[in-house]
Amino acid sequence: MSEWGKKSIDMKQTADALLTVLEEVLPLLKAIPDDVAAVKPVGKWSKKEIVGHLLDSASNNQHKFVRTMQAEGHLDFVGYAQDFWVSSQQYQTESWENLITFWEAFNRHLAHVIRHTPESTLSNTISINGSQSFTLAFIMEDYVEHLKHHLKQILPDAAIESAFANVYNT
Image (cartoon, rainbow, N blue to C red; front, side, top):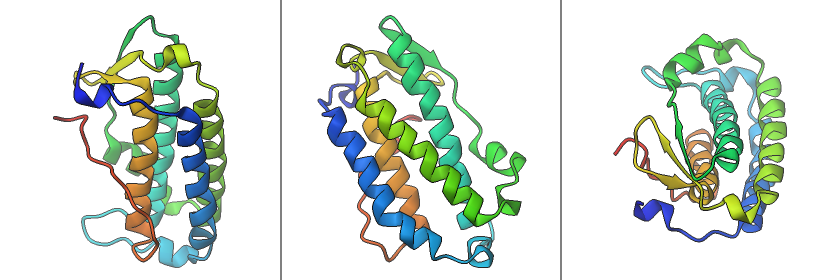
């Protein structure tokens, strides 16, 4: 098992960390006007598309969490083509308010799932698209770090720290 799969994590702490991030950034996100959120830098995602990507991440991670809980030891999981997911769902044309509202609700639910994950499943492992194996506990903690990584892109002046490193494609 990789070094990434051996980390011991307090899931209540991880769920609380996710909720704290929501409470801290929601007022900042809601203050961004729709037209500003729609500005699309050349070759990059707009703020709307970044939140759309975070919705896709929430959806994919919900499946990872629940399926890894259910697995008897190890789960092989498919990756996803994030640029296709973002463009095909047309997040750029969705209202900023709708994106933020859905993102908040989905993440509150994921915090609930994380908090109530049976301890006996936290050492179950998952590999994504043939990657090395990671524990369920690591995937849950990393979800929060990935979220903060992208929130820093939307809110560069906010006091957000992220320890995210993309270890899935190595």
